[in-house]
Image (cartoon, rainbow, N blue to C red; front, side, top):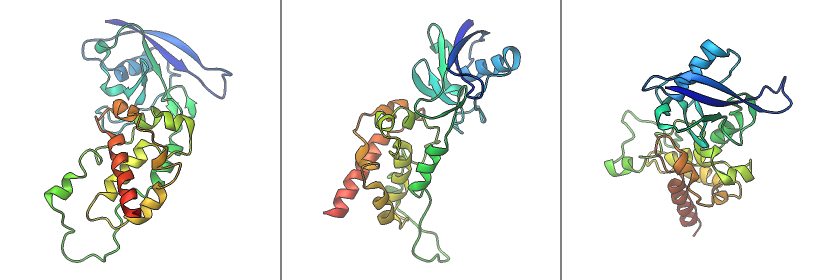
Length: 232
């Protein structure tokens, strides 16, 4: 298949305005958008910049906007995309160059929710056990690969760059609902404000954008219930 890719190009050090450039790429059956980007960079235009690493949908590095939808380039099959294939950086993040965006604000918000196990009780020579039912509460939260697709697709984040965003809130859910963790109260204080849980308006864009099929909106709803229970 000879396919046309229309790719967003912008180098802040040289360009005044972003532009799009078209490339023709021969794409054998089974080719992904990442395969095509590699062919462009290696054989046509070495100045094209994008992130990639694992090639297996695990690291989240190659998240970008493909034909208007956020996805992982390594999981987007070319044969499933019709017409000209538009490739753009994730929206609402500062652009470093071409398809590379600045993820520092994204990870700063992740750090803010304390995404790690907090234990007030001193360790013993035994494991911190939990029941199968308690463990099941974590399903759909620990699988997040932090690609940023959900936060980039969130209208609440577009309007409020201080909003923690669905990825950080999903990570907060993962630890608050872990029966072994003892940091619930300090995390709820961080979440219970206009830039936290209550900025989410239950739009579900994050759930549609997640390449792993997770539902941050559902987890945020559970966190809202948790805050209300703790207060009243």
